[in-house]
Structures are given as structure tokens and as C-alpha cells.
Amino acid sequence: MSHSNQAFIVARADTALACDTYRNISLLATGLLIKGGPGIVYGYYISNVAAATRFVKFYNKVTAPTVGTNTPLLTICLPASSAANVYFGPGIGFGLGIGIGATQLVADADATAPAANDVVVNVFYK
Image (cartoon, rainbow, N blue to C red):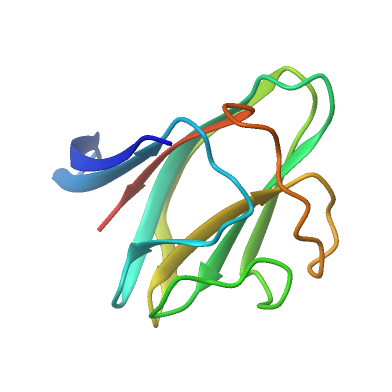
């Protein structure tokens, strides 16, 4: 599994906002912590290379989430062989911290892991 945090610039009409980038080329159901304190997600580029739908779940937690136990703040459906790319102008606030995980099913209680390298994520946050 490979993941990293790097700098990224989000262009805005009023100013340039330097964001951090979380990157993971094999997001699984193991909950991961992107940021261990309050943060804002400004956008993401997420792809699903599997032949079936996958779900990426964002959690508002100060520690790594327990996928299947904790309730996600945001769930993104990724149809088979597709990608989702979005920029949120004002961002989405996470008051505790930013956690992430991926599953094969949509239910909050699902912890069925995607296969390795099914889900690739890039999250732009501050």
C-alpha cells in the first residue's frame, strides 16, 4: 500500500490556497487518518478501476476511523471503472479530523474491503 501527503495549489478567484494532498493508490476498508485535527476538504480525485461499484467514506474523527463501526460524514459512490473529481469552493469542514476508508458496499456498517489497487484517491485538504 502506498500513500503520501504532499502540497497542492487550488486556484481560487480571490487567492491561491495552498492545500496538502493525501494520496493512496490502494485504499482499503482499513480506516486511515488523513489529518488528526480540524480540517477542511477542498476537493478530491478518486478513481475505481474495479469491475464493480466501490464506496469511499470520509469520517470526522481525530483518530483513524473503524470502517464498518464509525458513521461516515460523507459517502461517495464510484461506479465500475469510473472516477469522481470535484472541487468544493468553500470546502467541507471536519471539526475533529479527516479520516477515510473504502468498501465494496454502501451500508455504513459494511467493512468489506475492495481488492488491492481498486480505489485510488487524491484528497486536497487543509
